[in-house]
Each structure stands twice: as structure tokens, then as C-alpha cells.
Figure 1 (cartoon, one colour):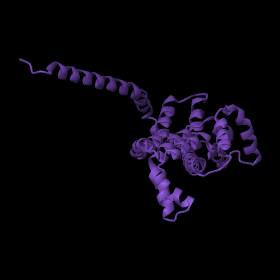
Figure 2 (figure 1 turned 45 degrees about the vertical axis):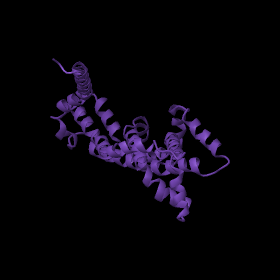
Figure 3 (figure 1 turned 30 degrees about the vertical axis):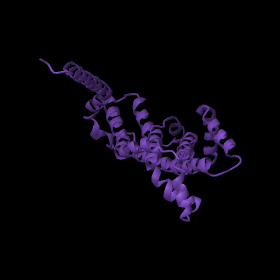
Figure 4 (figure 1 turned 60 degrees about the horizontal axis):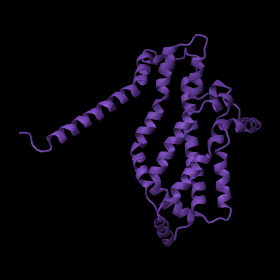
Length: 266
């Protein structure tokens, strides 16, 4: 005689097995393009950094790394300060400033593209890393995200810092930032990936091959008269390694970021 609950346990095991099978199938479908990428590009991998290739791929990797790191660091610094100021510093015109920042999110990128190009060109930053880095040092969306995070930051921690004699800057640097590392890491991953994957702006600004980013270099392989698909696949596989590395290094902080954003000071 079967014990009580046998059918319920069997049904639970069957359901778990079905879920695992669905996850395995979904994971396989997700990884299939990467498997094809590695399979077809593996043979051409030594050619990516070869001197025989007209595309300066090694240089473009360095340029993309410099641009992504500087833009990510700049956004974390400037946008966190702006978000903290809007969330915590009493200021009569703070709502108007916030509305103005949020309003810029509704403006299509195509509208500001030409004025931004004119400004960069007038500064002499064409084919210069400054023209690639500086326009991306500030993000309205990142400011908004930081403001929302700091609104929910426990006010008691800030008050304890003020009682210890810290200034507002000291509270931000010694109390708020160390207790928001998870959120900073999550924003850093988003900003880094967005900066690394930029294409249109670097394509217009980097008119010299020495200032190409990796996305521009990949496009030059794709639009050549005699496209070398295997070389393109190998270069694409190399170009995603920095993103994978950033994700692996910051993965544990991302989990903390999810839990930290649940803290409230109310």
C-alpha cells in the first residue's frame, strides 16, 4: 500500500523535473548563438590581433575599455552626487531641477545628436577620446535612479553620521556610499555595458582608425568588400569578454543591490 501523500510527492517531483527541463532547453537556446560564434570563429582567433588585418582591433579594444571605464566612473561620481543632492539636500528649486532632468529623458537622441556633434567639433575633439568620453559622463536616467535609491536610504544612518560630527559630504562619502555598494555595482554594470555597446556616436566622432572603438571596428569587418565571416565571429567573441568579466566580478554585488534597494528609512 502506497503511503499517504505519495501521489502529491510524485506530482511535485514531476513538476520540478519539468521546470528543470524547460530551463535547460531555454538555456540551450540562449547559448546556441554563442556556441556557433565560438565554433566558427575559433580557427580565426589568432588572426584577430595579427598585423595582416587592416582593422586595428587591439587598439579598438583599448579605446573601448578606456571610454567605458571613464564614462562609468564619471557617471557614478557625478550622477550619485546629483541624485543625493536632489534626494537629501533641502532646496527650493529641487523639484524643478528634477523635472527638467526627467524631461530630457523624453527627448529623442536624434534631436540632440547634431547639436552635440557641433559642440564636440567646435572644441576640436573629433577623432579624440575626449569627444567619446565627455558627452557620456552624465546621464539623466542614472541621476533619477540614484535619487530614488537615496530617497529610500535609511535616514537613521545619516543622522548617526551627523551626530559623529561628519559634514554632509562626509556622511555621503563615509556612510551612504559604503552602505550602497550593491546599488553602485548594479548601476556600474548597466553603465559599462551601455558605454561598451555604443556605436553611432563613436562611428561619427572617431573618424580616425586610431580612435575607433570595438563596435566600429567590428562594423568595418562586416561592411568590407570581401567580408571574412570567421574573422568577424572571432573578433565578436573577443569583444564580449570584457562584459562577461565585469558581470562575473560584480555578480555578488548585484545580489546585494537587490536586497539593499529594499531598505527604507521610513
